[in-house]
Image (cartoon, rainbow, N blue to C red; front, side, top):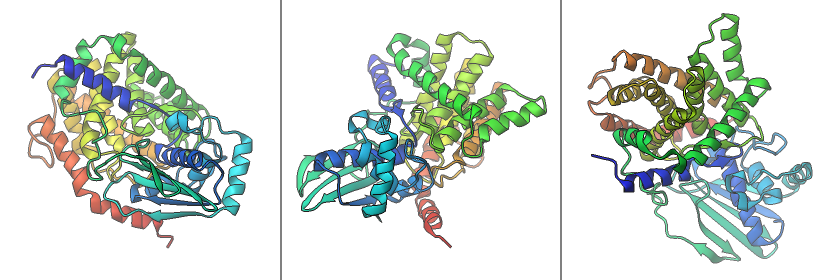
Length: 431
């Protein structure tokens, strides 16, 4: 099946939709974004706040630092700082303009104002409602499926905005992805006029490289990326694989621990945006590839990551770094002159090894999961370049790459629902 002009336009729309800037972890940022919108609707600072949230949002906000918050963590902190100083017009960069005065006011607000968090009865993994009250006045903002996808707002009990939505259809509000396939993605990367996608990709290179460098040079979390590189330097064993792992992990180190630099996301996740881009950037730099070739590699990486995540959904018990690392490994094979078959083999080899990594929320250890996923993806690349691939019938591996991707998506989206619930129960149990 050949790539059509319609496919090209769809793929560009998907990239525009998914490769967007975000300041900090996208789940607390989404809470802050809703809080800022709710305050605007209310027209004043509330005297009571209620946040009703799906379990996956609770899981992903619990342990991560809210950026520009003075190192505060948790859903109440995210909602409060959005309410106090957030700019809803900036989307996932809602906290970009927070001041020290805003942080002080937020801490005072949290000491005095009740902020209740409860579990929302929903089948959607990404779904929450922020309600604010001031005397007899009230306002609410409801978001589902995507981090800034507002489907309902109210003021004093009356709808201001109401968009019909299906809680079971996570991709309904997104550009149609049914045309995505590994074969079409490679053809798109080979043939697209780069000027049509250059601004999107240049921003990803700029933002994600800067935060990776920040993570390598300064103390964030346990400095998984910097320490990986330091250990290799001590053994005089710094390879392109180590540098790729370290860069991606360092970006996550910084992002998970409150760095105020923005990242460009992939599939709603900054960590996945880092993982899909930085190993490709490091490899192209190491091999001194032309810049335009790097851009084509990033098209492969980003779209293959998105292709996998379309079936899985934004949030699940499946670690999204695996999907993103699959993309970067496939892009390295592509940049190395690998064939379509070898790109497919890279994806297969990666999924056969690390598709069992679970997501237990956003937190500093995400950096090490990223390093492990990139390590597996680059090992998969080396195997594929020697035409070595795990055979159909070995576990979840199928004879067709699209069936393998669909099978892993089914495991992540359907098979791990109960796993997700168990992980959440463990995380919220203080014993």
